[in-house]
Amino acid sequence: MKPYRVVIIGARFSGLTVAHWVHRLLQSGEFTGTIVDAWPTMTYRPGLVYAMRARPEFVRRLHIETRKTVERCGFHFVEDHALRVDPSHQQVHLAAHRPLPYDVLFLASGSDPGWNTIAGLNVSRGGLCEDYLARHTASVLKGWQSGTLIFACGPLHASPHQPVQLATADEFMLYEASLLWDWACRRRHVRHLTEIILMTPAPVLGEPLGPSGRARLAAIMAQRDIHIKTQTQFVEVRDDGIQTEHAFLPAQAMVWVPPYVGSGLARNSGLDDGYGWVPVTPHLQHRNWSNIYAVGDITNHVPKLAHAAMVQARVAVHHWWSSLSHRPTPPPYHPQVIAMLDIGYGKGLFSLNTTLYGGTRDFTYVGYPAQIGKRLFNGAYIRSHGWLPVMP
Image (cartoon, rainbow, N blue to C red):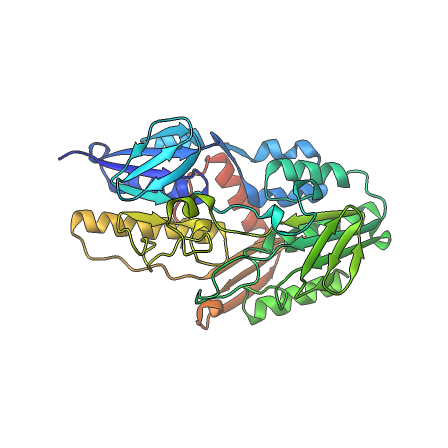
């Protein structure tokens, strides 16, 4: 029997986890594996929130040589940009290489930022989603003395027919960043000269959290004098502030999580739901093509979280493997929201809930162990070059 040609597009959280499980479940002679990504390294994005109180060069400590993990899994790394998937001929068309054939394809390339969907918004406004944005933010805030800093989250452009509706894809990074900036300003003794505003299109703070998580987060924000503006409709972003549907808010600096607009790759391939997101079954299988799986930010699941992406990768690979080996179908993906936020002062907020998906589980804890747990996970993931695939 010829080995199965396994192709993964994307070498971040979900892509690396897919590679690990394929390596773990199949023998070396049973598959030939290829991972395609435009970059041979990844930046550990959850760590970029520390730009709020670090020097610009801190991002070097967050770089992971993904090629090492890819090769450890027995995969071949192709440094290229995936342009289009041809599901009829089972090929991935690349920018600089010949079409790549596959027997099974895992889409783990993430989504595209919609910087141009709001007038005046662009990468120069500041952000934390990529290392160059975090370096810029750290440079702007390095000599901060006084003024207004706005943390703004762009809207999620998704299908109105999705069963779970959220106004944003992932605000958690902004929650952390605003709280860490408050802590940094207090340590610099300039907090009384600094106004912190957090703006979101969501109807409530902590939209993906359960009731207990939203209540604890709101109490912390109020205690730290961080002003929250919900249901924000952004009209225009200017050098000196943000124009909303109802008012203009001046600012000396901004930190953005841009709008999420789905995947250009999915659109170009005709694999999306009409809004840029890949529709999947409970086992993360494409609804029209059984040999294509999608995991992580590219799917129509919300919110977009690293933990969820890694769990989805495990479920997808086990489902594919069970069909190959004629084993019983494994359990489907059971979504839950797990958030670990560094809130400063050595404390963290941990939240686990299923209420967003109709469940009843709702647990929140605030304290030192939550922050320690987050730091341990961050350090372990970076030091292991992404070799932490086992997630609950």
